[in-house]
Image: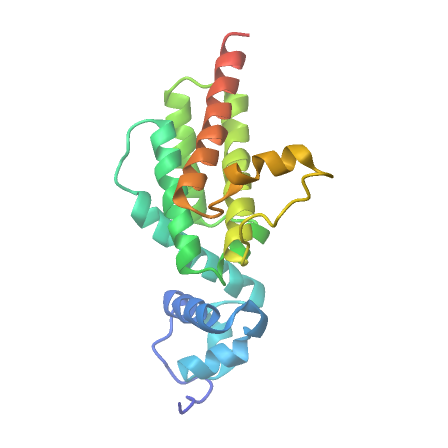
Length: 211
């Protein structure tokens, strides 16, 4: 693709650059990502990208925001109650991770403070307050929910698999439980663990609310 000269209008904006960066990482992985390769895909001089996004760190943030916007659209159909909001958001987040497994590590390893990320958290914590949960439980909830989501999904999209065979003599209890740990990454397993996470938040809210 012929490259435009520096300073020549290329119809670039932040959204187009971020979308192209996501597509590049989806194709080739984060380890091969660079501004020069992105500029080649866009057919522009690298300095044209820096005119819109100031540096590689800001570009990684723009990519994160672009894929998080998919979660916002998927979850934005006004479910009722904080648990339903959390559940719908969690499933939309999981689907996004499966669509962009090579981009997802950015979400799990970088602070997410974009307007898209904060809007999703605001929707959840507002519903929790409306339900009367104690403020400390609400304040802890985003880390609790997204700690699970990021850790679990990072393991899944990084190529994890079912538990390997366990020596029953050395680890008898683990071996006895092995059949219950099959289906790693399945929606059934995801829902089961998500139920545990949300149930823990609900129970903590009940304890603190009556304390």
